[in-house]
Image (cartoon, rainbow, N blue to C red):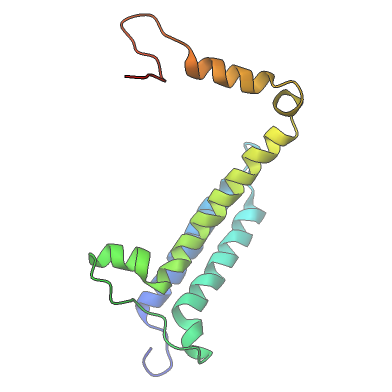
Length: 142
């Protein structure tokens, strides 16, 4: 930061994190129509996280947010060792968590999975089905 104004790279990171948040937020819809409210909320959370990771820590006097000294390729270093990249990972983690939660709630609320086990049996039978020759089964032991 120079003269109290944010660096251009910080602003770019905040904008990219916000757009990623909106993009992944649109994927939270369980119908064909996009869920714009969830997209905007996840985008706002991503923007806030990006601000804290890039600019906020310095302005709050908590030290500088920057890369560590691990010698990796610069892009990998930015993605995995730079605290500013947390803003880019936040929407990815929110989307992954939401997808996992959504998939698990469907199974917990469906009696085919919890009471009778019909869905689990169908999954297992498809996984171990031996196809006609010359194809090989999905699960094999050599």
